[in-house]
Length: 124
Image 1 (cartoon, helix red, strand yellow):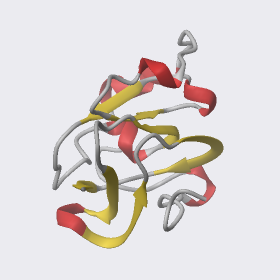
Image 2 (cartoon, rainbow, N blue to C red):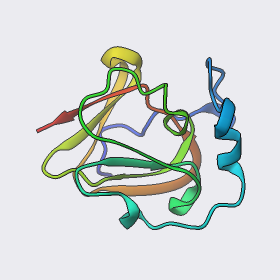
Image 3 (tube, one colour):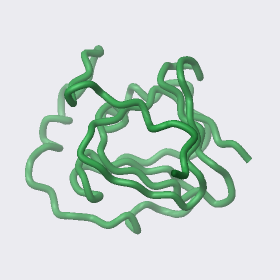
Image 4 (cartoon, rainbow, N blue to C red):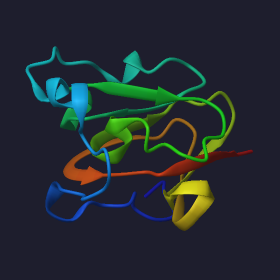
């Protein structure tokens, strides 16, 4: 496996956290045209709300101490590190706290479990 630990998994697919899937995020669960991992732009880490790179896609570049403002990062099933030269280091808590792991450059994965990430850095 290309990650030092599996991304933080949400038990039963539901995480009780403030703002989770609030507002327009509900619309993201509607029928959305399938995408491919290749839809993730170069230099970004991307996640999709559905398995097999379907549903709403959210992307980030750079260091982010708080990813909770992006609803898809709080419940996603597909991910791709399309970073230019670095590994993506994720954290289960804001401000780089909690458990962490690495998604190596170029690694993509999809499954049926819901995952979440609260903050990230790039490990070069």
